[in-house]
Image (cartoon, rainbow, N blue to C red; front, side):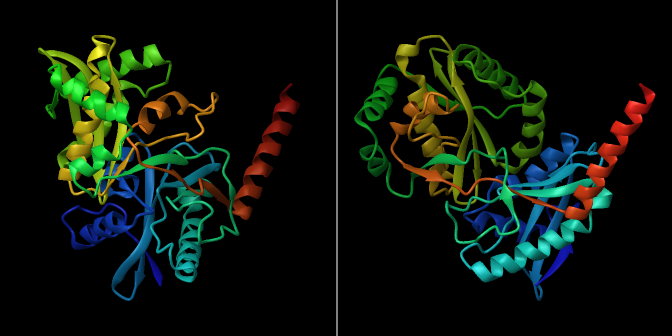
Length: 347
């Protein structure tokens, strides 16, 4: 295998389409390794390094590493849902990972980085030993989530749910709640206002409005992202953002308002999203963050009680892992010591 730089691919190019097909087919990867997500991060003001692994003329792996413009030598190359490797084949995965690390290391001066942080969706404990890596202090994506298999019929999916979920889906429908898709330019502001209301009530943090408009500008034209709104007699009761990519659809963001909570709009939204995910060709519906033990201190505990009613299988990944380039790390330490000495001399 050999490494090839793939930065700034036009989506219409054959190599770009090969990359998208490779990522979509890899169960340990996802939309955060897509070209659309790379465009989103670029619009956010980040740089990225896109490396492809080739076996002869065939593209067989790679990674999109994101990093800041303002690293001051101490930045990280970060690959959420990556690298894209044949993780089921330990020897080839190790070979590919080693090649990617060497190539990333050769770019540390250009990007002012000193380490790599990876987080493929490899199940814990994983077939590959991350021998040259240490467990990262924080994860790039939720380490634990809930996967709902939606490969069967609608009847099969409903039958596997907790009776309360089935009942509330039916109740919401009987009481006249309808779910509509709205992908107009104005829809993102409508969505954000609902998310703000839910965040204030349930006390969770959300990104600034600019984050969502930038995300929408990058992903909406690809058809990857859709906004669903639950309504009752013209009044909006809730909203959900669904990202569909490859064999998996992800419930990325959502919330309900404080109005008419008895109409169970949240259940109607989830069922509509699951139905839409099936229509998109997905086999898995990812609830994106879950704590099967519902520990009080876990930020997903409260939401996990709701998510658990829809059935599914708790999934735990290996989590984020860091690899430091020792020469670059030494440079950062020396620079920090020198800056402290200079500060002491000035005082």
